[in-house]
Image (tube, rainbow, N blue to C red; front, side):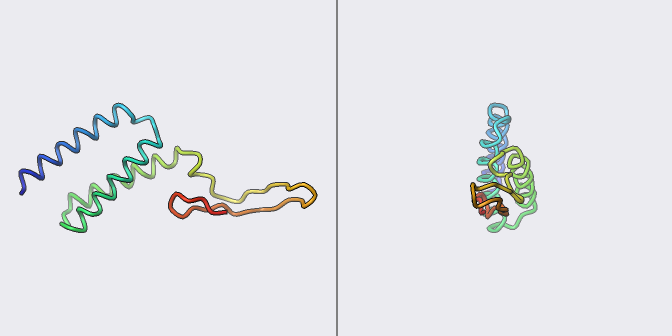
Length: 103
């Protein structure tokens, strides 16, 4: 019930604090953990519809965005120009579908 949920939420907060203290400077780690926590919070929000769950989804969404901005291979979007021998120059548009690069 409610007591178990509060206990679980306190435990999650404690674990999150410990993880951040140990790995908070590793953007790829933070991205993976925050993405997983955001998905879990979304499932909880969909099941319960509580405001607390909605706030957690938003908190983790922000963490995901901040971590992603620090990961070079996830920030290569844009127009790229390259010279390909006798063929000459070509331009490609790099975008992402989730974490998958599309050129």
